[in-house]
Length: 533
Image (cartoon, rainbow, N blue to C red):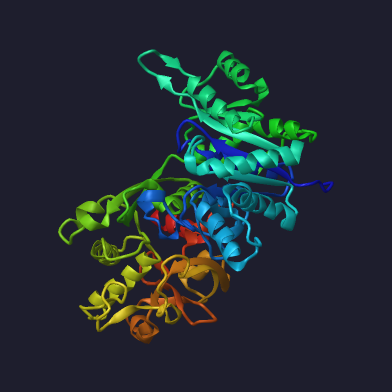
């Protein structure tokens, strides 16, 4: 392909939040990839936190971790699952990071005594971050999603930066605006007025959207699309509807069918050419539609919110589809688990995932669940804190250490089978200070984990934790049947434990869900679902 200057696509949202800007951004990325272009996607969030690492999952859903060890918004998970690209810390920017950079420079004297203002200093830093990936990496397209909703006071500097860039870049920049078209049941009508007001608000900021994606629960006829096009100064072919679909993975195909990628290319001035076949994606969707048998999986955790375990849920769903089953996921609140009700809570479950998390709340329920699944030989997958709870349960009920615990939960426990990492002991800051990002792990040949990875001996997975398996107990664990089958070669940290005599009982200190994509589901999730079948 002939080298071209980087093109920029800005994705904004109006009317209400949670319309699916991340899914639309990921879909655009996938469609442009299918045409042979090198693409990346970045998220700009208007909140003042430096990153989502210290945010409660109820506030912001799960915290996604990049391979280079940065805590980011969950939308980066969508970007990676759809496109297979590896995002970095440069793909996730918050208002907090922008202001911190500018303030640090001011303190250093870089602005030569000038008065620091939102315009130009904050907007210039936003523009620098928006352009950085294109200048350094040679991408054909950079898709920039801006969080929040048009009209939010905190997003105004981002909108001003986009306005300036649109003017500076000319035809090399396109604005895609996602809005909501509500259906009023009493009137039996779809209403476009909120979209008109949203576009008017955007125009008031000096930005004319090139393409509108209308989020709707009901099909919009051509007359309604024409009305929106006329009122909003947008070509009819650039008014695309995003209807409710059975799966988010059908969105790229729906967008391609309506010509969203073709409209973007025409706006930028690139020959459209033939529509790519996307065979692998369509094969995946065929498998998804044909999967009729269900496998019931319990998610044992303390956050009763879908987005809190988003990557785990999607990894299970993807692995289910490739195993020709539908993964039916059932949340089980670990705070409500007792030894008396655990059988009832997990009744009918063919597999159990003991979920990650932080803090004391709900851990005893996870330990009870681990004991129940171990003694009843139910396939069990413990992730991060979930793995640690499996280790504690084994110490209490097999090794005979009734007071075994994690130093995180009980600093004075005499049997700290989970202990704080040496390099974490003197850290006082919470944000961005854990063991984060991808680290190597050597697998024990012949283990179930080794087989799941296709008999690889060295893997690399992403971490997010402060505490670890206490190696001084390793011999006791292995003598009683819990094997340490994955070890970090540099620090000798235990990464994976499993009980070989069980059908499938594996815990990982790392987060495999961060590496699972639509076209490459993670091998551990694949193996787990296969065992659950």
